[in-house]
Amino acid sequence: MSTAASEALPGALAGRVVLVVGAAGGLGEAASLACAEAGASLVLLGRRVPKLNRLHDRLQKAGAAPALYPLDLEGASPDDHAELAARIEAEFGRLDGILHVAASFDGLTPLELTDPAAFARALHVNLTARWWLTQACLPVLRRAGDASVVFAIDDPARTSAAYWGGYGLAQAGLSALVGMLQAELGDASVRISGLLPPPMRTPLRARAHVEAEDRIARSPAEVAARCVALLSPAGVSHRGQLWAPDTARSA
Image (cartoon, rainbow, N blue to C red; front, side, top):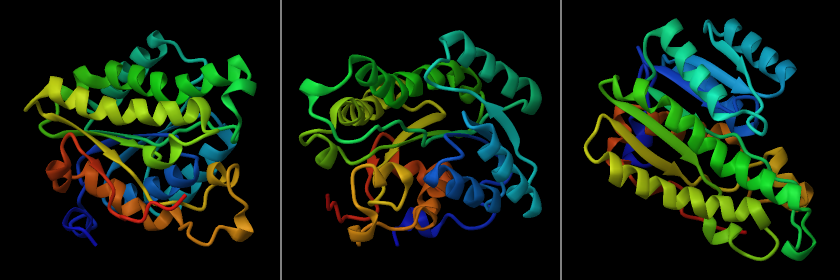
């Protein structure tokens, strides 16, 4: 285990308010549970209210009191993201971290045969909406002494291959965004990092791989500690970087 991950102990996020975007997904749920265990106050954002409610109940049983924020990134406007930032500041008085794990992927398709609307949706949900939300939250993030924005990125070394379409192009864009935004922020109190998780056993991956034959995929729970590490003070060593804590990059 890397140094940062080993320092993501219980209490690593104590006193911090963390927004998990895509909280009801495979990695989102596991990361939300890990962040709560690490002491974070959570705002859980997702588009599927029943799944958010189930996660909320699970966290409550573990002693957490998360806030729910239902929002569909596909249809949300910049004004909707600005309202989100304002409501978080009004309710909590601060925002210390954003974990971007929401994703949209319809499956492997040749670019020539991709529906234009599906192509645009993949670029928007996986790249544009992530930026709009981050941009809206930067003012409140800046007021924290040490804030972290973490983008989960599907390894571009794999998703730049044939048939990954708009989703793959969005991953390349996210990789560029991490370095670009950090360069612009410089030594500000907000740090940006990208997490390149190993292949995980999630519904998204199942759209590209036959689960019964997918022996390299790991449980999202094994990756959740990495999310905590990057959100915590220990993540400062990965400022402006794409962190691949597990070096295996199998397709």
